[in-house]
Length: 281
Image (cartoon, rainbow, N blue to C red; front, side, top):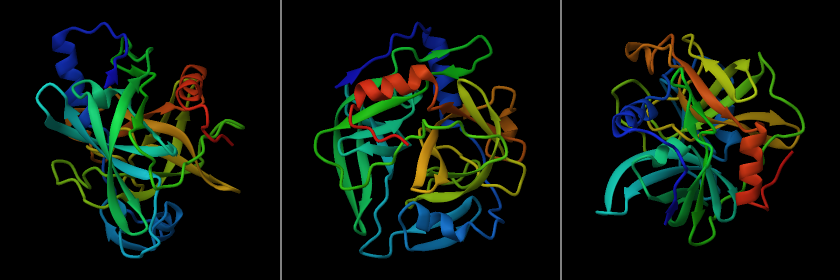
């Protein structure tokens, strides 16, 4: 079951958004010497160097992560219509992007828990009722909550509300998307480090300048994390490439990705209403 956001969009615009939604960033050469520690930070014991940073391999019986893959379905005919990334924020809730559900009604959440991939079906999906597209084709309030039919065997990641993310701060990106433009999506999550370039009331932006990790198709809905004394905390959700980025630059050097700012009052209040037990820092 899906509770739809009240967004007034024409059929033509919806089609355009589906294309934009799946093109959410770029690859990287993953040159940071610290990338090997990124997989460990999100719950994995082994990693493999890839173009977008580190591919986190399911290797140990202890491997468990709050970063999950979402298989998206059209309930009218039961067809698989795409995939996105999400983050567990309670035992029965996953935070992801609203645009993932423009053409989908439900999802299957794939969790890595204790070295095993476990699939859990959604019970309902709620997109932010204020999700809309601005005059410059920028998405606003691009978040959704996937409620699951049973408990997710993964830890809940907290959301940072005690302070604002800062320009120049190192962040961690992670997702199940492609590692290069027009490539294949990976079976294991890929993670790496990036630098926060811009912070506004509604968005956080990271830029792909060739030496940082960056989201790509299939990473939509994934979290932007930063590290504090307690571990990783969520500050944003992958929304779209900046509309100023040309199609040729998506998933390439020059791409810029906008994350929905989790500290936006509209977004933080929506999450709190949907997931009363969400952990905040």
